[in-house]
Image (cartoon, rainbow, N blue to C red):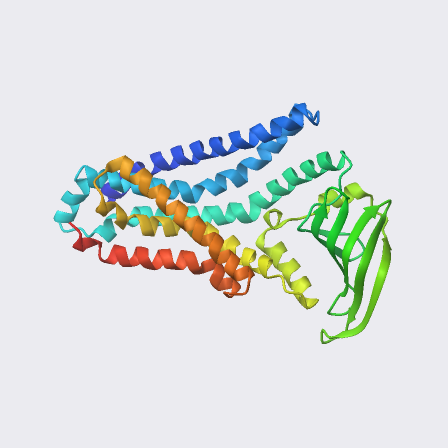
Length: 358
């Protein structure tokens, strides 16, 4: 069995490496076409664009790992089924679940590697990429911040910008959290705002102070408020963070800070749980796809077609589940793990019944 385990691992590694390399190159090629416009339209240096492309490699490669695991599982085991090698071993008394153990172990290892990279390498690389892009965009005179971002504004002050109107340069749905010595921050929310000359100008908003138990003890509405800061606009470019630019710890800190202010941030809570659930897709795909290879004798063509069908269904289901979590139709944890759980349950059930298939 050790000989067969090594044999199956070699069969798996080839398609896996090919898929990771191939899909990464294809996805980066699409990005390269977009970045090329920066060279000719925005006159950005080739070296800068090259750095941006380099910073996108970790995120792109990590995205391909679950896909490559699915393809490699179906192609490797499918090839053994097609050539009747798997049939010979099963007729020798070895159960199918035991035969696919190496692939399941590889799926767990790849999931662990995916989570580590997603939590350590990818957020940092994404942040460097987005910071360069913001500097390029800011140089053209558009808003200093992007929409749907968190950032530290100095003096224990945190900002969240919901939307940016690129036509008027207005910031919409602005939230400002100022931390003090108490457990809860003071909260300033404004419908619109703009940043100019070291000053945040907020319009049509509400200022609230919370007591020790988190209840509003003071509230004041305003038509215009100015928050003066010593920081230049460019400094905010390096402080901004989207969900993709934060690891789970950083995102959890932002969520807790907002929840202390009494605000619901369901989209961020769902994304927080997805940061753990999505890397597990590699193991889930291996568990789900391994027994499916017994259903077809089409070899590589069967594996490719089945892989595409599974991927389409999985990622559509993830999108629907995430939307249900954001809209309070499902608890955030359930929304993040629902699809993985269903795939794992069906995969385990298929695996248990696999020896009945001949």
